[in-house]
Length: 450
Image (cartoon, rainbow, N blue to C red):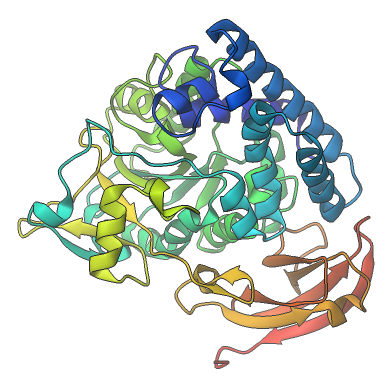
């Protein structure tokens, strides 16, 4: 179970992700920026009434999530969240609660569902840089370009969208290359300070951190541990955003550079925590606080703005033009002849990453193959002995039952789905709604499989 205070911090994500004003509630900020439309039923409300409605929706969402987390199995938790969403037609509540639901959808491997539930439209903004296609830039593989940029850096900060785990895939890809360059500390926003002892096993478990229960995030933490990084928790359990940003920066400095001035640090954080300048909830972001405190200028890698949305109209105009011209099958960035790298928000972030549009295969996105490093293994209702709904998960054979799964899918009707797995040995488990095994068997994924 996740610590009580840790869940409380998640409420702040709504504000951190959406808002640019100190006390502006999340939906108001999103609508002001053109990210979402104002619900029709709320147009009769005053600003003060609308703010109260939003805050009430956040409190209600948090209470529902807490109750759902008391359910005995992950499938039951997910179904409890979805049922509450479907049962309430209040538009303000649904806009807020959809983000909460999306987290559970990522945990059970329903990435399309998560993307549909919560996806911030990326409208063009006055502070956007000129389009890279008209500024002398050309697309190159993101991994190679970023490793070139990090050669002489003491710290590199990556951001992510908690509801779009595709934004975690490049981070996972780069951990080995960064380790080879000498980076030796890995800090993840999701990790709980109280639960860091669980990582002594060499892999994450469900109590290690809130978002870490998602399989790609789990692989990120697992990979960092295997590569020999010192894996640390840094995010502060503060309800006030400004205090949280300052405390997070202080924790990074105290745990890493204060103890080891020669250290090199990789950080994974959500959305605008990694911006290096500009308004951040009326104060300074974690990255800006960190730079002022340590004197270290981190490379800031923005990964949440140039992604595909469920509705094409929600994509940034630059994104649509870039993918139409480049036809990418992997993350990419733009560089010019003088080795400059393009960023959508100059001064805030150092580089913007573009993620390719996804293709669905057997109901799941193709990016789960991680560029061919993971193999597809087809499962069906037969693996559940036709007892539906059921959650099918693959766990590493050497890890305990409470380890974060390598991949998961939910089957509610007879169907085929693909699990994506690195070569190796696994324990394939089919679980019922209460988290009890329906069937368990050994599974080997061969490195030479097509």
